Image 1 (cartoon, rainbow, N blue to C red):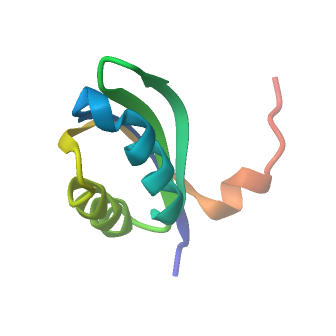
Image 2: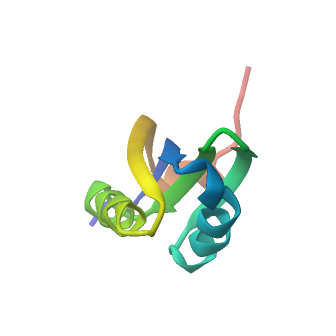
Length: 90
């Protein structure tokens, strides 16, 4: 089987009063990394996982966090795991 790595970036819109709570709750979401927050109610995160289904399962979990209004998938990239160890030639 060809193993893959899926990387997705998302913008999460939350109630402004819950930005810090949601950012802390992201620690419980497997493979989530918070890259930035804004007091007006936005978080930028990435997710990494073995499949698109895994990514979507994590998005579903994020949607259930108190204070979350919307989760927008901005970008998703898939790379075969074996290629991550290959050198780049010019």
